[in-house]
Length: 67
Image (cartoon, rainbow, N blue to C red; front, side, top):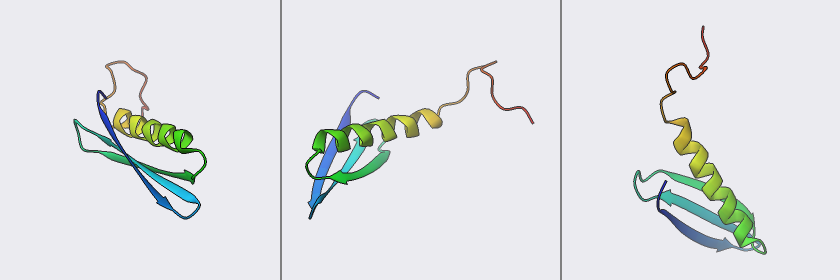
C-alpha cells in the first residue's frame, strides 16, 4: 500500500474519514469524534490495510485452515 487518499467530512460532532488505496481503489471508512481527527485517520488507514491484506493469497505452507 504505497499511496492512500484521505477524505474527511464533518457531520455535527462526528468526523467521517474515508481512506482509499490509490492502486486498487478499495476504501475503508471510520467515524469518530471531531476533536480527534488523527485518531480517526489512523483507524481508517488501519482498516484499509487489514482489508487489503485479507485479500492476499496465503503463502505456501503458511498455516491456513485445513478442513
